[in-house]
Length: 118
Image 1 (cartoon, rainbow, N blue to C red):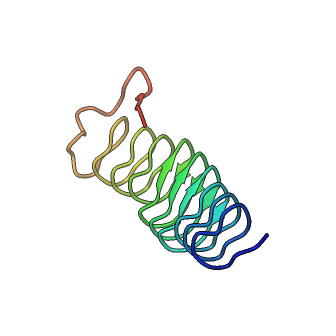
Image 2 (cartoon, rainbow, N blue to C red; image 1 turned 30 degrees about the vertical axis):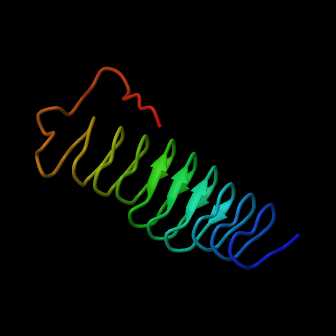
């Protein structure tokens, strides 16, 4: 079943709000979202502002949980942008790593991983 408009459910949707499939627009859930502002859960999001959970997000401003995020706000992985948590982050602010702006420069290591209730 295919619906290329907004709110496609259980199929491949190229518009916003695709659920359980491949969505190239914003709001793809459980699949791959490659567009700007895509929200991908359990997959890969490569667009700008992608929010990827349990996967990889390579776009600017990506928020990646349990994976690798090269944008801002990466959580539990490697984040080269601002707000990386638990990984290697070149931006600010950074917990458990290195911070160029010096906010957490005095606290660069922790003994246990940061546990967050997400």
